[in-house]
Length: 179
Ligand SMILES: [Zn+2]
View 1: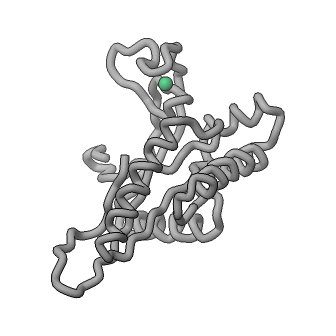
View 2 (view 1 turned 90 degrees about the vertical axis):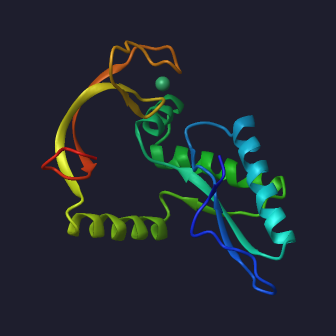
């Protein structure tokens, strides 16, 4: 899915519009596949179209290198999570370069990314928008998602859900439990 962020602009004569396009960031738990390429082609078409119209367009993508999915895939490969994710991330970046897709590539392990996320997190905490609670539920590591209701197995992976109990941070109000 291609996302266009920021406010909508209307073209006026001679005004260059700055656009920022993003894709999902891809899990560095496996090799790039056709679904990733399809998404990037759509994003690149959008970028090229807006550039042809005279806009300044930046396309950003990257890799998500955190989570149990990465940890488990690395263990299976006999590597550390950092080394494993680094190799997988490089495969994504090299693929986009090889396909001639001009992107700004961000890794969730990049120091600059960590600094921005830390700043954002601290602002949310200072505003009282983050609270911590104990959470239990049924979880699919491959989806990185909890499931509720009478679902016994993951509808995507057709495997039994795992019971998880952990302290988690939530966005919203602790008084109402919204988030
Ligand atoms: Zn799943």
